[in-house]
Image (cartoon, rainbow, N blue to C red; front, side):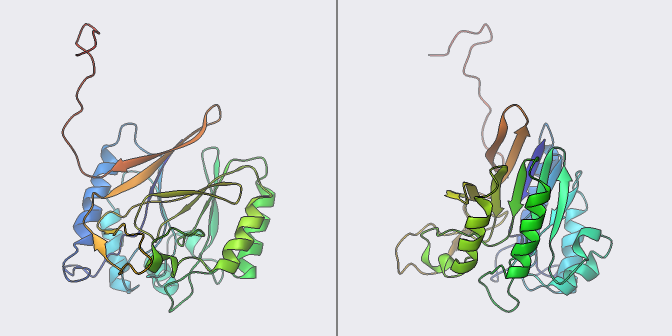
Length: 274
């Protein structure tokens, strides 16, 4: 089972740029092309929020058009830049997005059970998980004790050290409750999130929590306590999670753009090149 994980698309209205000069649409076009070109191709794509920049209907329509060439199923999560009602209107045919106050759902991807959480607080950049959302997760985890589970949400439940992003992470009280809940379920293989526009991994909830970069722009790596909020055009990337029952889950960092190579380590006859 191969699951691609992308995040933070920040799609604008057609023809518009983010922050006046970030072409998020063309970045997503390149990302979709790379996903389609992978061999073997992922079985599905999980997109962990900030699908659009302002949550407008026409942004979601543009997003839908940009995702249409994907040659594998994709699944959408809510981020702080999104709007639940607009997402549901434009993706009205997606049953998993439609039920209840929150955009939360469970799905089976081969042997994996994926539990998608809604960590949005409308009108705020930081995230939260209320008791109702955590209760839903607890019920889903109870029902999947015999399955390998991935828990996905937009906001990271951990401290990254990038101060301006840590101020906008999942609320500490909610993160502590999530940590305690997940520790009861050793079958949780990963906690997957976005929001921070960088690859990050840490221990959390008795498992590994990880974030992924964005297709267009990355948050600047700066661990000074007074570091300004800024982004860079570092290479766009995503994750591919490979799961087998024999080997478990391995997560790979994959660049969108092509680079020189591949070059062989050996001569055609198998001799090591010196």
